[in-house]
Image (cartoon, rainbow, N blue to C red; front, side, top):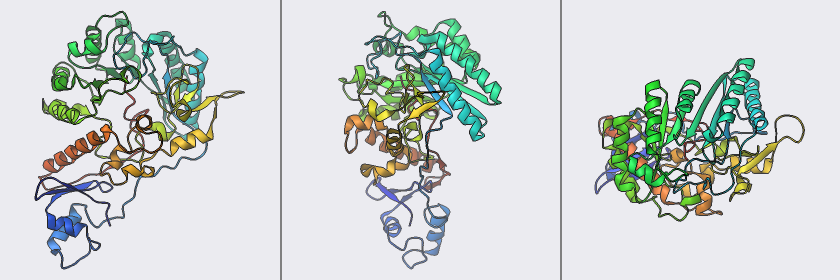
Length: 458
């Protein structure tokens, strides 16, 4: 029997969704009763042969047995991707910064720390017979504020890649407040970037002010124009606050008219760090603003993303936290989450699972911690069991769920956003396939990008 979810659309129509089959259709009450019966898929008098054949064609019944995604990680972590959290220093003082960058004395990564991490992931890639390894730059601040280390470590990674016959992939997550030399170097040497930018200049300047007090919009606009001229691949990460939601469609339209990003990811602000006391934006108003933003143009509809709504992907892991994510703090220790970049932060004991080896290269790992992280998969969350979006959102962000409830997750405002936007995606797929049913080919994966779908959040 298929894993089926039935969502009422109106008094007479239902959305029927089989996530593990990547299939959905619009049904009436009689068809829903049949699909929910124990003998669905069998030739019975309850339904005509023609309708049964149609259901099989639609992928709702029959075919191969369903297979839920599973995690099979054994032994110590052997990552082939590293995220270097270069520094906690930042040239901005964003009103909602999850890391509260600039509120404490800055820390900076040393050269040997970066080299140890690069050597480790490159060696893992070579031993696994992979063709490449990946180095990404992030921070509990702005990674380009440790510019010498960024350039130096990238050059070192290039040398390691050449020596091992591997390809180096690299990217940076930045607030975009760069100088001309930095813009040119990034476009010439990295494979991609994510730029944190809130759209309309007046929105950017209210929430993302410089440490000196001035606005940051003009510098970021200059960066985006430079990346476009260079044909450089970048995405934009927007933060929506309760106060800015009404202008989200205008902000998205502003970006789409003027720039050429690969994607635009919009997330409600994280209620942590300097945003901990802000009004929540995880509301129905976010859903409506997101929908309105998508309607501003065909380009906006193609580019706009939300991390938990990922129709087309079937996974049991929201991000790399359950997949041995390898984020190196400025002090050299290993966290599974870039949002927990400081060993003194709340929940650090749940996310820091490694430290430089006591003797020689490599790392010593805490099996208890990394085993617990690997277990953060959606099938282990009782609250998610009956949710139709569970194989797309995969239980959402573990870090944020701890803030919601440290013992047993029981849902959050993001859950309703995920369900509503996933339902929108399903209805769009059905409409694009003729208006009655849709059959896709779900991509099975456990990881979206280097650190997961929310990797690019600053």
